Length: 115
Image (cartoon, rainbow, N blue to C red; front, side):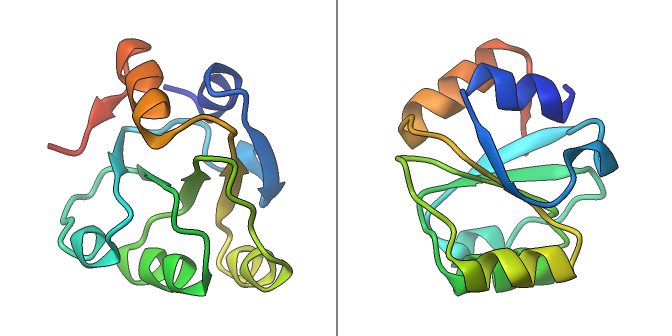
C-alpha cells in the first residue's frame, strides 16, 4: 500500500518528513508498548501505529529501523520529536482516529499486519 493511500484512508496529517521517500509500506504494527516494538524482526518496510507520543517512541523506532510512525487518538508530535525524526529521515503522521479504528481501516484496505 502506498503511504499516500494510508494518509488518505486515516485522514492523516504529515507533520514531519517527506512521505515520497517511502512510496510503499509492506505492513503495520499497532502498539503503545515500545518493548513489543523492539521484538519485531523483519526486512519489510513497517509502519508503527501508536498513541504513545514521546521521544521514547522515536528512539525505539530508530533502533527497530521503522521509518513511518502514525500517531492515533489525536496525539501530537512535539517539536523535539519532529526534529529527531527528521534527522533520521522518518515520516510522522497524526490522525484523530483511535488505534482500533485506524488498524481496522488499514487492514480492510489491504495493509498487512507484521504477523
